[in-house]
Amino acid sequence: MKKILFLVFVLIGGLFSSAFLEEDDLAKYIVKYKSEWGKSCLQCIESKGTYRVYLKNTYTEKLDLKVGVQEKDKRWRIFQRLNFAPNDTIVGYACKGSGKYMVWTKLSSDNSTELPSDAEINKQYSK
Image (cartoon, rainbow, N blue to C red):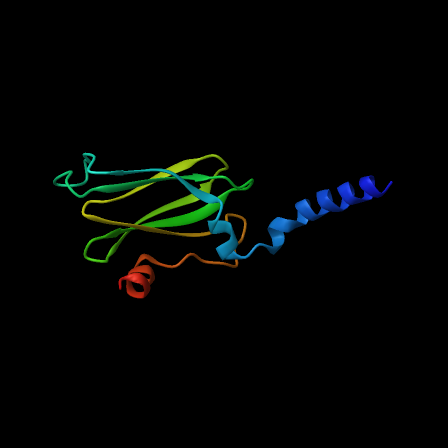
């Protein structure tokens, strides 16, 4: 009987856990599964110094996210995806990359939270 009650509490807790996740907690579900240096990119003049990061949504719900990939001059090249479904992937790149990237995310169903604007990201994190 104790095992059944424990399982019920675990299942109920799992149903309500997404409602209590903080915005920062969701970023941990965007997982880097690959990165590459020096690959050709149609958007970049030359391939030397390019950096690509490949990310996957491992969460069970759709997320809205922004990915910033930093250029050597400290500016962020921003990529946005709305309704990013579980197991979907996104690739971000920098033409002259520093090797750094950041992720901002929220539940797609959360209309009370906004992702930062590109200008806010560049102002706050270009250091």
